[in-house]
Length: 282
Image (tube, rainbow, N blue to C red; front, side, top):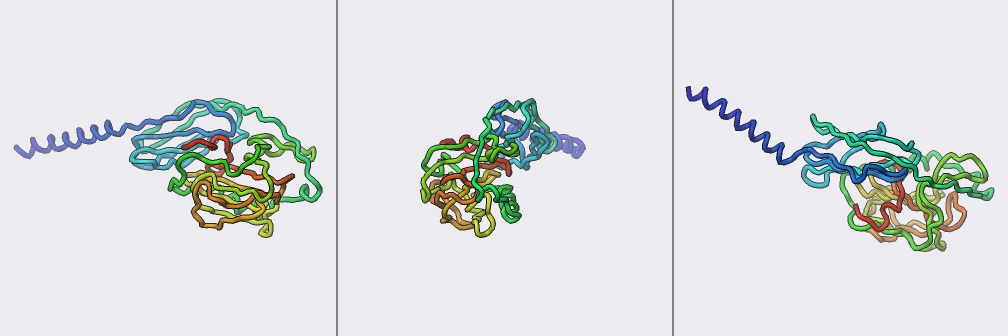
């Protein structure tokens, strides 16, 4: 008779314990804003999940990264050519599914006409250049290396904004500018915008004909930064660099009309506006 009474009590204790734990860690999805322009990104957080959630936006799946106990986050890029309109951010965690409606608005960036001389106009990206850059930009290391404010990587005037559509020598518009151009004298130091690991150094001699001498830094959790057209590279692959540490010098290599730095920021391999990072922390 005692056994018949004790078993229901035991299972009741398990049930109430499970319920109380669920109440302590409720699953909650939040987004920093319900609308973003093309080329910006959503800051998506999820609390209460014990295992890595899966996130979908615009038919693409993104990893979420653990920030602290039961707190997950993703910086979700809005590609510059994403059609303006209504979308949803959907997150699944175990048996839970939540979604938030969001809107993408146009950034209305202008068309930029660029004149290249014959020595630059004929340059094409090599297979080695394209494959190495693509692999580096899709790095998704779990450890978050960046902290504090993101720094402008060199001193100079911004001469071309992110997202402007580009026509070369009067040709059709087939691409957009995937970073900021900062005009500076050749040889001006270039520094890392944040702490990270150098995952690519590429030179003209190695086939980097379009990007010129290149450095790419992995900052962790899907974020990377690129530095193009350098006259010299002073960092090496595998090197851990701090925010503000010199990694190269401004140059005029690759497809470039004058000495400048092309600075780009990427999330999950998609370019986003570097101005969103400069002087801010995430």
